Image (cartoon, rainbow, N blue to C red; front, side, top):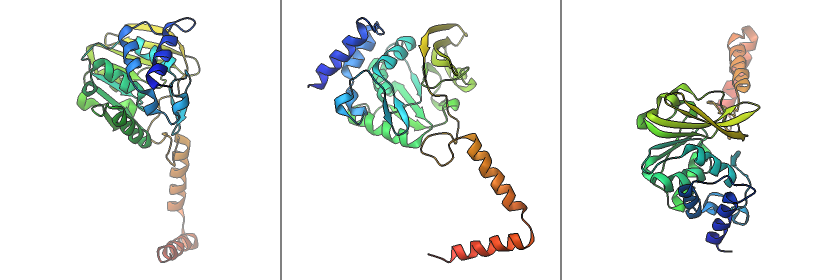
Length: 251
């Protein structure tokens, strides 16, 4: 079937009962325009209202994207930072709303950064800036931002992101740990909630998918091993040095 027809059906389903998650006409138009199949591995299910697993992350379902952008409410020409670019689909929809050169997106996982860049270029949004960064640090060299969208759960927005928000800006994120609620917070700390959501937690350096060290425990284990090796004495240290020498001259 024609992808344009599938997009129309997808958006119609988000606007109509029983979902009724999409009321913003500009967001509806943007989601009708963005070729979602360019961001997902399976064209047949790209427009189904479901999540997809890609490179260790969740590509959000259309219902979730609509809810995020309803809460974000970007205006034309707003500068937007998306923390957690994933496959790049949300960034493309935002680019339709504010202009692609006004969209900046970051992700801590380098494979996802490359994936998002390729997807956005293929879909015609190569003007979106995508960089590999720790989400908690934001993108200070392009701040301030009129809108910041954090696609990962946190108990409270990282301080750096709050500091990168424009005076009349708005930050949207999933608030909480086990139980989460979508929340929007302004630079003046005014808050508004938009119902329950379920997102993975905001990762820190060393926890991203696709790396050897995926969490703090692994990093600590490696540090303890390094300290044990440095503390060896006598014949044990001689054996390590001999083993290293053999390794350097083999293969």
